[in-house]
Image: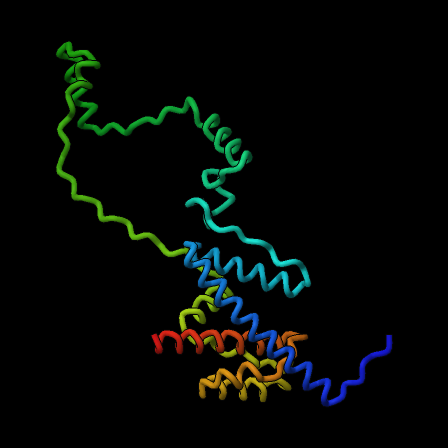
Length: 236
């Protein structure tokens, strides 16, 4: 197949298509995040889904389908048999119960209780009668309720969540010599982000075909998402 001649008009058209595709992706991600939060999907699950969509697009695979949560099981650790509702999960739970069946838990007996029981046996009191009388318990300070810990997000998922909340992402590290030719573009992007020029950011030409352009594209997309989210909050 004869390669296409890259005329200025064709290059401009390709750059315009890439900019529109990036803007469409940002809008789709924002709508997906909003809908998932409305459906009650946890933040760590939202990050996992966004990563799955990015990986599918990167490797030219079909985008996976995500069902709406129908029970509290959605978003939990699927490796835990107690969180599964499938046949395999029931079998795993049944096996776990069989493994622990018959193992009686031995309660810890204090020295004072042992002494009380020994004195009762000396006085002819049966064990059954002794158990019917509760041993006096000392005053114990109430335990402070445990504060539930928020699930930790991955780096990519955390950046997505921060951008959706209106927080600007950090600029990529282009200090290595392999990124030298792309440093001017990074400087231009940072200037547009500081100026909050969303329109110019969306139209900025980037071809994400290697590591450096992909980092620039992701920085641009997250910046647009953060600026739009911040603008929406300010106007609300």
